[in-house]
Length: 226
Image 1 (cartoon, rainbow, N blue to C red):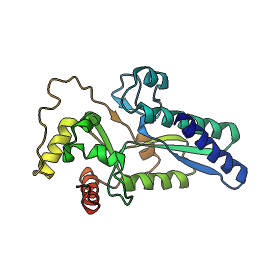
Image 2 (cartoon, rainbow, N blue to C red; image 1 turned 135 degrees about the vertical axis):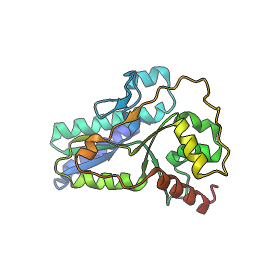
Image 3 (cartoon, rainbow, N blue to C red; image 1 turned 120 degrees about the vertical axis):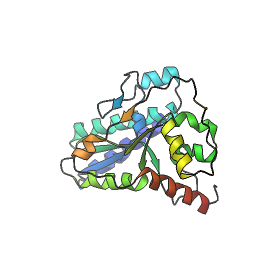
Image 4 (cartoon, rainbow, N blue to C red; image 1 turned 60 degrees about the horizontal axis):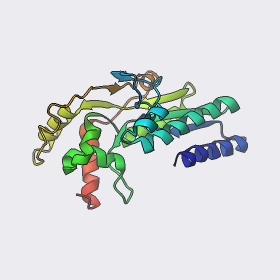
């Protein structure tokens, strides 16, 4: 998977370079290329990179995703610098919202763990950061059209904790039974992602957490997942 991610990214970038007409590429990376390290940060920004060797040695949850994402992004940015191709990366957090694909998107599946009673997914929500799918799409377009966009950009609009997420679900979806004591006694260090660089460029997030979840849940009912 790692080789496929890196070589696939390189193949596309080489094709763009050889075309002589493509001047800019916006790469869809992930917050997974930012957060997995031993920095101990409470707030992550674009200067933070996932430690690939740490992921390999500890086999942290999601390492099979975070490692190729990290290496592919590093490869793309380095390629752009070496060949004079304008490459910009966008790093969304957990993407939530309505979907048109026939399968259940993994990010929505994680985000809806509380709603669906999927306890295996709770561990991904201990320190949860979300962004609406339409804001991610708009972020891509904004970075593509902005002449001042350089490097990588975190795209995350809502930072929350498991306790806050439980309260949100209890208030908005009272029909769902919440696991109020699931993480009782566990040592959970909160952190958040900063989208300051993207916001300073002039981008504005449009959608709230309520709209993210309402859209995702509606799509799930329409497609028979709920």
